[in-house]
Image (tube, rainbow over all chains, first blue to last red; front, side, top):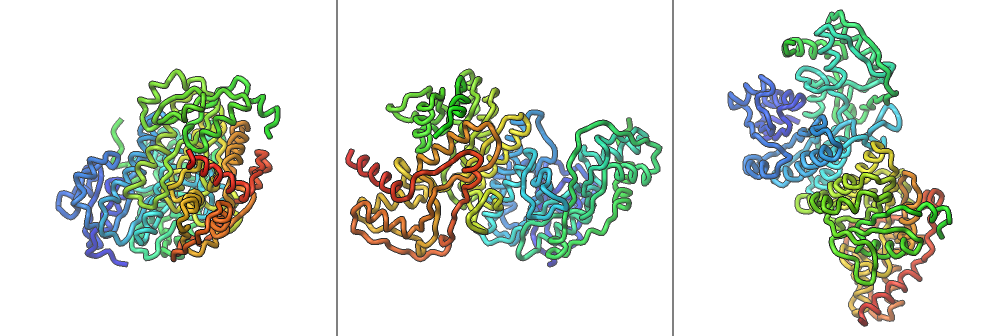
Length: 314
Length: 314
């Protein structure tokens, strides 16, 4: 379905997935409003905002008063891409952090929905974190959800609340559970961007454990494709979005060293065995016509080039 | 009923019961005292003059309330967590936030102030399952809550399991079937107390749909037994708790009419959503907790009717 001429609200629109999604939506001639905290985080998005092609509303979803203030400006939203969330712990303590997660993700979503009066479709960015250490691999959508952290619990809770809402209001809801998204603008502190930064600086790449743990890395453009397709989906549902293949941490590190042409060494540090996680993406392939196009080396190359330009001088 | 080993496990242990002034809480406190436990109760109102216990007035939504209670909470070993919002609405926009605040955030607040806790028994609900995909519903059935109550119970379960993994204390989760018996408050959409009230007033009993859906409601004293069993077993797990017999709404209505000596008729109202059986499989609790529900529907309904009459006479 074309989103040409539709009004679309993207929460978390200044993040990695969000900013690429917004660019694609603008290209597709949608009317895009972005909710976020920092409009200047990525240059290309800042340009779109400056030129008036995107309306930016500064809003912290953890603060209800913030949403009240912009309520009228988002009331006519036809399609909602709800991506905002705290990717990594904001507070050091379990309890403070969990309370913040609940305020931002769970309560924030409810407050946001209170201002939606005209919706035709919702796409919610959930995460592999809802599964925790999966009961089996590859992980399909029927795998039991047993989150290991507050982030995963909140993603799962928002899924459930939005499902109740969507059923009652008869609005299609697509829940996308993404695996590890990578590519340009990756600001996370996880293994993949950390490896890249170290490779570019000539530092050792330190693998925790035996390096055999397999994970599923999906390139950001592919994740954007899935999100766009989900936004216009008539029926909705839960979809795993990943590359559909596993890559061990050791092969990841080797690929990064190779693609970046780095002289870094790869080292292993003892660590308890971590769980494998590989997505079964057949449901998304079938129903969303999702087909990840970017191979690991190709995707890594793009992320490496981005870090090369943005690496702070040491 | 309880083994000497179980009762011995209680010696010198301090037990905190939240929601101690509710229907289950009051009977649970009496039961715990009878097996020799040192019980403190927490609620926003005291359980009543006839019940003696160390009462801590506290709203778990307020961190300042918990701070004030500080010293009295420091040495608690076992938490039996019954406190909960009970509204089973589907109206996310208006009813979700109070449930999130009390059930989810409130539980985190509470745990934060119980530093020496070794075991938690949490009363969840069959509503975490949503519509049954098969019967009887065992603990492996997918969790797809259809109302806010179920969604918040599920979120609390998941947070407790994350907490348990982090600190090593055990968490026993009881998914209770609809509880009936003396002291069950009418309202909250519960059919049995509503039927009894109507029958006693000689007013028609209103049944939504055809009244064919069957449930294995659990009698209050059996539910209390299950809670004591789970509180005394320092192990983690999820257990369904239901009654020994599955009765349809229609059968319950006829029985109540007969037992109460009323001559009213059931009145059927056309409804679509209420025709599914929900029978929970309690074999896991039988095997792992030694749970054995002893009260059949006939006996249980008679006890509730008798209780209603004496209360009414007063």
